[in-house]
Length: 166
Image (cartoon, rainbow, N blue to C red; front, side, top):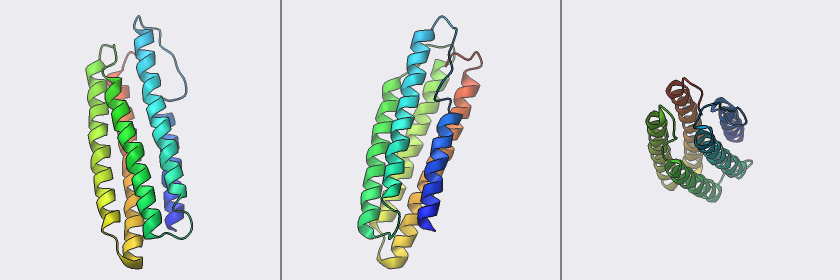
């Protein structure tokens, strides 16, 4: 059951990349290169993070142990640290509503950091079979929450980009 929830969370994250606009589209604005570079960087960061998180989730298929939870948690933290760094490096796109887009990514970064901190605390404090089950649930919940936060950030980007510059 835990492996199924983690698998579903990973699939949901992949679907959210599509919702975030990754994988295509173009702009006809005078800022096309800068906006396109920003959007490409965002999609690259989200794709890298999603692939890493899926891989970490695969570590939890089958018999979940304290060691596998620690490894998956560490891998998710590492992927999330990279995502936060990548989002920060994006800066502000050169669009009319670029600051709104940057603010949405800053908020997403803060949420992801908070989610990872909570997940790692839950995994660290896990003890025994019941503790491992609770920690596995925490990992699944954190991934689901992060997926929802990415979806929310994508909606904010859509709202901040009425001219379709990104």
